[in-house]
Image (cartoon, rainbow over all chains, first blue to last red; front, side):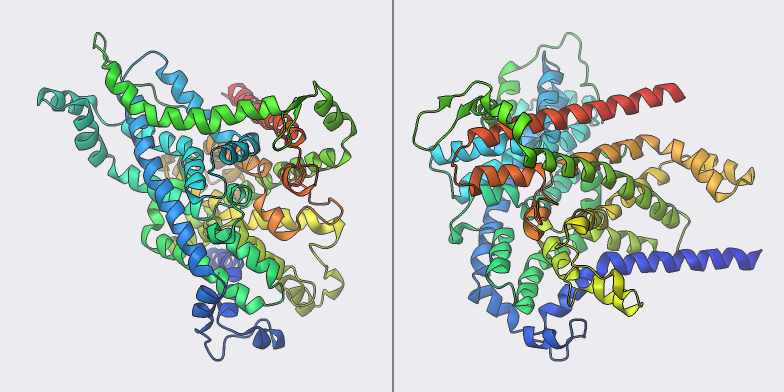
Length: 275
Length: 305
């Protein structure tokens, strides 16, 4: 009986290990390819790197314009995340804190756009940005990013703000805090964990964003990282080694963020799915 | 996903100035970048919209052409709906099995959990390129493994053969999202009262019965949420297809999103009216099916309790 139990247990662990190899394998493979030259790869696609060709990273960084794409992504993502966090937190605080007519209606109107397919806005957004000279501009793209992440940010923050006991606000008010100070000095510090969750979540989602970028950006110097990789893939279809290096440049920041904030990130991604 | 009701302060005077100030930035963004574009897309769908020319009113002509004559559109709808109905089932059931395995206190559970969640954090561009290589006929990992275990006859040009291209892409999304579903279900399992599971243990019912009669009913709300989330995600899918197949071969992997993009920016008609019609029709289909799904799930919940 005991033997059967441990046998089942060993079998389970084996299955889990196989699945782990399946889930992580492609990234490990990409990592090995990124350190090998294409001619080495052509001999054997699955060999481990013999000589580590670290020089491929600066080559991709400067030679294939990756430093520009990386900088653009960084600018767009940081701007958009900063704006969406402030605007989203203000709105969420308002929905959770004040009782006014239409509170739930407005909240639901914003929240429900989470399920909208992006196609319903993207063509008109393209027209609007062209009209106002924001087409092909990083500022325009950042504004659009703020708008698409707003519902999720408001949703996560509102559910957190709503749990702050209102006695705290009444006490702050008695101490003579203004409405703005209550938000800035009471709500925000308490909600810091939730704010951190939305910041990390929005950063990852926008770092990976492709559809809006491909419609709204065409100039090579304004491309974000996903667009840059796609262009590079199209130009250098055969140069597997170099493309892999480019992929790693996009993967590594995400892995780093994940390594430091894995719990926060998982919390954010799964918020709302657990009922 | 019911929002909690706002705090109630009877008789309190509301500071409308503060409320307006707090809501203004979000409302402006919402009005300018969501409401207005939706309305404009809807308006465009009745027009021929060419650059630097006044829009020409067409009435329902775009809708007629799309719904009655556009075979590629219906092919794309069929592909997308197939994708959106298979994926949730695969991802959620596999995710549940993996979550149960981890729930049974396996050593290293934390590491497993972190590793399995990784694919979902990567952009579809990165994932797409990786899988184009994995599916490569000559040197891809998929065929290499098949050849290594003596199943050479099963080797395919996975993304080049119209018969297997769509299933191959569905496989990629399942690879990506199963870990996500697993983590969510694991959280749901951990939030269950442990007495229930212990009671089932004492009653000595086997794992299979415990799964079907105890665990699944208890985490059902989470499962249904995950199904809806996965469904919505697949109805929107664009990036992965665009990187791997661009809808080919022979429209085998064309989704509504890729078709709309092609009609708007790749076909040389330069007309934004017709693609707006696609967007409007698709919007109605997505919204309708999500509402239908949640309604159907609620009905079933009611019947059981």
